[in-house]
Image 1 (cartoon, rainbow, N blue to C red):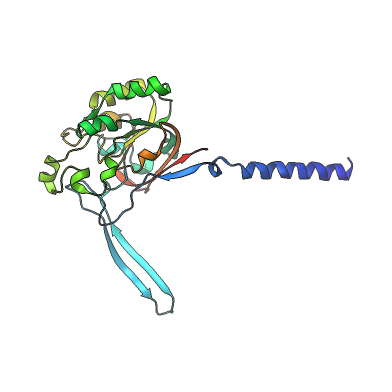
Image 2 (cartoon, helix red, strand yellow):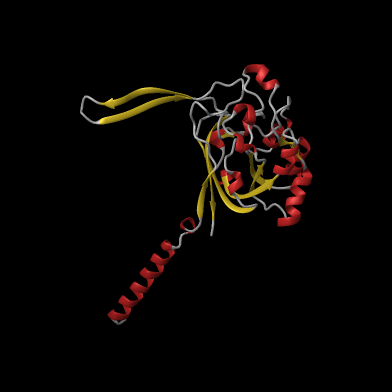
Length: 265
């Protein structure tokens, strides 16, 4: 073959490869951070220990260079975090057993803000899902189901977000926020195939739940939960791609979660 023809073919292939790199899917669109940062303001369940950061060293070392290091302490379930299925169902997946594929996927965002505005203890109904499907089509297999309640506007005001500033069992008794009705959780596992479920409240079950039935129903099927998710108002009803990666705690029932969404142009 003519060497000039070979060179032409080579540069043509190289140009094609470069074009593919330049148009990578993640380079088009925008990222949305769905995670609250961790600090002394981070909200936790009233009976949980809160976030604590201790200074190991801050300053100039003996070697003459600047250095910072801290140690932190935190309960598993606080701030933007993952609930592993083992949290409410025996012999189900722990944090490190959840595969990355189950923690990534297309988001379905169900807006229940109007109902929550009328009743902050509202429990999401099957009708909310059917109304979404009537407008956008059936919830796709492998979707990550997110409920947008509008409660995130109150973070990190404990009384406005949790319903109480009280701690301990007295605080638990005064919790007030929306969640998934157990009948809706049952409908989901019996009629749809989702990877995970999340919401912008402290718990999958509403604040006054004492049996945490929705947790149990979902976790029996190894469907993990994302709680205290931020900025759901910035996501479209469908199409955003979710990446939700927890701290990989062996045998953990939960973990701090860094969750983001990519919205393509």
